[in-house]
Length: 435
View 1 (cartoon, rainbow, N blue to C red):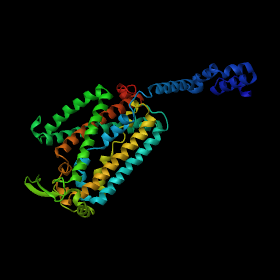
View 2: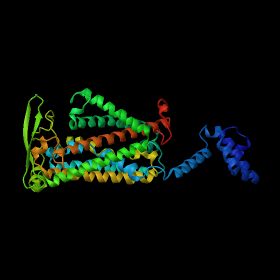
View 3: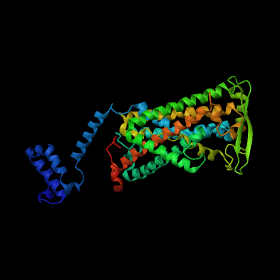
View 4: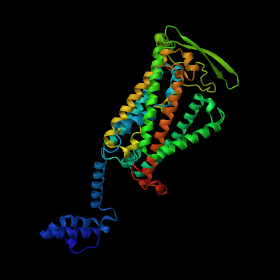
C-alpha cells in the first residue's frame, strides 16, 4: 500500500494502486470485479507487454468450441475418414512384388520376425498418435497440428515440411509404380515404347494431372475413388489367398511346372524351369523354407548382387508398414477427430499387420525356395483364377496411395501456412477443410 500511495506509473504500480482502491472502497471493488474491470486490466499494454488479452483468448476458444460442435457429425466418419485411407496407404506394392522373395531369402522364421518388428514399431507409433489425439481438440494439419501444439510451432513446422515433402515424393513414386504395372498389363497400349524411361515420365505426368483434377474437385471424390481402389486391392488379396490354398491344378496333389525367361545384365536370356505345389505340400515346403538362405543364388532381380542380412531385409520391408498417418492428416474433414483417429488408426494398423504376417507364412508353405527366389511375380503366378488380376491390383493400390498422399500433402502445407510460422508460405494458407 505504501508503494502504491506514490502513484507509481510503472505497470506494477498501476496494478498495486488498483488493488488498494478495490480493497479500501467496496463499491469500487465490486465494480472492478466485473467484466469491465477485467477487460480494463487486460487491455493495459504496459502491463501485458502487448500480448493478446486473456478475455479475447477465452472468447476465441469459446467460438472455436461452438464451431467444432456445429461441425460435429457433418464430416467424414470412422470408416471413410480414417480406416479406409490408412489401409489404402499401408497396403502397397511391396506385398505383391517383394514378399515371396523376402521369404525365400530370409526364411519363414526370420521373415516373420522382421515383419513383426516393423509392425510393432508402427503399432507403438499409433499408440503415441492416439494418446496425443485424445488430449485435446484437433484442427487441420493432422500430425503437424499435434506436433506443433505439443512441442512448439518451430519444431512442428520443421517436421511438417519434411512430412509434406515425403508425401509429395511418395505420390510421385506411387504413380511411377502404376505406370510400370500398366506396362506389364498392356504393353501394346503405351504412349511410347515399353521400357523407355520417357514413356514412364509422360504417362506418369498424365496420371498426375488426372489425380490433381480429382483432388481439386474435393475430398468427397477422393474418398469415393479411394474406397473403390481399396476394395479392388482387398479383392485381389482374396484371389491371392484362394490361389495359394487351392493350388496350381485346383487339387494340389502334384506340383505344376512352368518356365520363365530372365534377362541377365550381360544381355543373355536364360530360361528357368520352376514349380510349386500349393498348400497340399505345406509341410514339405515349410520345412525347406524355415531357415534363412542368405547365400542362395536368385534370378528374380539379376542385377542385384548385394549381400543381405536380417537388418538390411528389415529395411527393405519397413516401407510396407508406413501410411498410418493418412487418417490423421484429414483431421479437418472428420466429424470427430479425437474419437475417430485413435480407433481408425489402430484398427487399420492391426488389420494390415495380420494380412502381412499371414501372407509371409502362406508363401513359405506353397512353393520351394528356388521358385520364390527366381519368380519375381510369384504373387501373380499363384493368384486365382488368372494371374493378371494381381497386376491390376498393384495399379489400384498405387493410384489409391497416390491420391491419399496428394491429399495429405495439401492439408499439411495449408496448416503450416495458416500458422504463419514461415511467412513465405502465406499464399498457401486456407481455412480447415477448404484446402
